[in-house]
Image 1: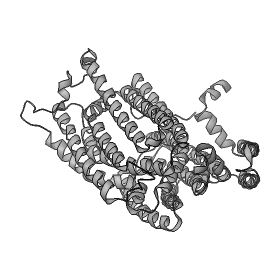
Image 2 (image 1 turned 30 degrees about the horizontal axis):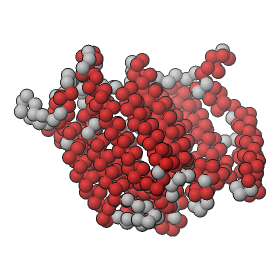
Image 3 (image 1 turned 90 degrees about the horizontal axis):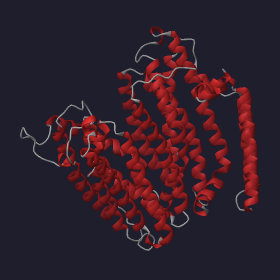
Image 4 (image 1 turned 90 degrees about the vertical axis):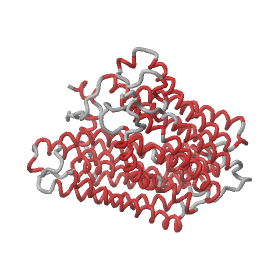
Length: 543
C-alpha cells in the first residue's frame, strides 16, 4: 500500500474533530438536498430563484466584504499577540457590515430589477432580513477567530450543525403550514440560522471562561467582558500592522468575491435570465455538483497532501528520488483513470436519466422546460470537473513558487474570460450558456495542467497521462450503454406511469452492471489501486 504522509501533525482529539467536521458537512449537504426536494413541492421556482440567487448573493457579498480580509489578517502569524487589539479590530467588521448591508440593500431594492409583487410578494422584507442576518453573524467574529486559532473544531461542528438543522426544521414547518408566507419563511429561517450560530459560540465561551478549561487551553481571555472593544493598557485600540494587512487583503478580496460568485453576479446585474430560470438553474447546479463535492473534493484534498509530500517543488524529476517519482506517476495515472471513469459513467447515464431524476426530485417544475437539458449538460461538466481536479491537484503540489504565481495569473485571466463568455453564451443559449461557459473554462484549465504534467515527466520513462485513455472495449460498452438507455428513455420515460419508469431504471441498472463488470476485467491496474488505497480492510483480509 502506498504511504500517505501527513504534512501537519495533529493530536488525536483534533484529528477526530476534523473527521467529525467533514462527516457533518456531508450530512449538511444531504439534509439540504432533501430539504430542497421537499420545499420544491410547495413553492414556485420564482421564489426559489429570488432566495437562492438574489438574496443569498446579498448575504454572501455583505459577509465576505465585511469579514474576509479581517479573518485572513487575524489568522495570520502567531497566536502570541495582543489579543485585545485583535478583538478590537474584529469588532470593526460590524459597522463595516452594517454599511455594506445598507448600501447593497439599497442597490438590491432600488437599482436591480424588482420581482412582480403578485408573483413574489414582500421582496423588500427579504432584502432587509438577509442584510440584517449578515450583520448578526458578524457579531460572532471575535468568537470565531479565537476558536479557529485555538483549534476548537468541535465547537464549529456543533454550532453549524445545530444552526443548520434548526433552519431546516423551521423552513420545512412553515412551508407546510404557511406556504403563502413566501419570502417571510426564508427570512425568518435565515435570521434564526445566524442568531443560533452566534449564540452557540457565545454560550460556549461563557462556559469556558467560568471553568478551568480556559487555563488548560491557554486562552487569552479570562472573562466575557474581554470580548468587548476597549482601549488597551498601552493606550492603543488596534494593532496597526494587522490593520494595514487587513487593508491589503481587502483589496484582493473584492476581486476574489466577484470571480467566486461570477455566475450569480451576471444573473443579478445583467438580467440574462428571469427569476424562474435562475431558480431552476440554481437547483440543477446544486444537484449536479453534489457528486463533485461529495466524491471528487475529498480525493483531491487527500492526494494533494500525498503529492506535495512525495515530490520536491520546482525540482526536475532527474534530481529527485526515482522511487518517489515513479510512485507519484503510478498514483497519478490511477487517479486520472478513476475520476475519468466516474465522470464518463455520470455523463453517459446522466443523459438518459436526467429527466427522471429531476421529476423525482422536484416534480414537473424541474422535469419540464430547460431542467433536463441543463442537467444533461452539467453531467458533461462533471466529467471535466473531475479530470481538472486531479490534474490541478498534481500541478499545484509540484510547481515551484514562481510557476504557481504564473499559473494564478493565467487563472485570473481565465476568470475574466469566463465572465464574458457566460454573458454572451447565456444571451445566445439561455441558462445552458452558463454550463457551456464553465465547460469552456474547465477545458482550458485541463489543457494547461496536462501540458505541465507532460513537460514534468518528459525526461522520465513514466507516462501518467495514459490514465486518460480507457480501454477500447470499455469505450464500446459505454457507447452501447448510452444508446440502449437513450432508446429506453424514449419509450419508457417519463409520462407512461411508474411501471414504465421502473423498467427504465432496470434497463439502466443492467447497463451500469455490464459497464462495471467490463471495468473490473479490463482495468485491472485501477482495480488493484482501489483495493489498496480505498479498501484497506479488504487488503488486510487478503493478506
